[in-house]
Image (cartoon, rainbow, N blue to C red):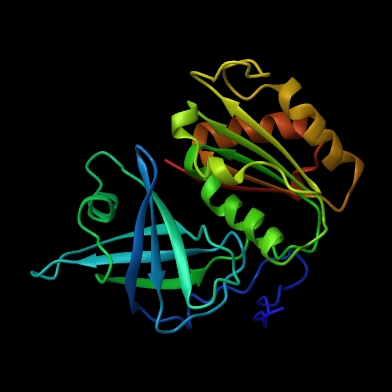
Length: 257
């Protein structure tokens, strides 16, 4: 097996990885690939001249600078596994009027340089040492997919459960990777339209659908729960989890919008 770089140490208590915010400088990454994920999302793969192993769930800042000095920057979660040495991947939704997302979708091409800074953050990060339940709404799947990929890349044996929610099958990120592997339990839910034979009700994440996953987290106090999505989705999922008996101290939430 190839040598794998160490995962950054976690600080106890709280299991928050030390943020590198104060010690990481801006650097110019090179675009290696831009690939379509869904009609509204692309993944951009970057090569970094200075690479620091991230913890699955961490993020980077991406900055654009115009000729007149005007800058626009956004935070993007890393979608790739921590062991993808020298490279990181972001999956970017096109936002109406979004300066950075529009640039990534319409302008960025292999060979271009993009300014990035990271990895950053630590509260919403999973090193892979405990069972985990992941609950994603839309593009909230991005940092959680880094956790799935990390588990697979390192052949970890800790249980992983994933509930991925999307509007339609066409909106589901990473669909080809969502078939569960040994030790994984996955549920894919659609809120607006579903394919023939779909076994769950079409609509909002419901208590009955989440129940078996929440029950596993309640039964095993080692479980950590990560919820990521829009503010409305994250608050709804959090309420369902706590109503199912999952302690709030084991739920970590990242929201956007």
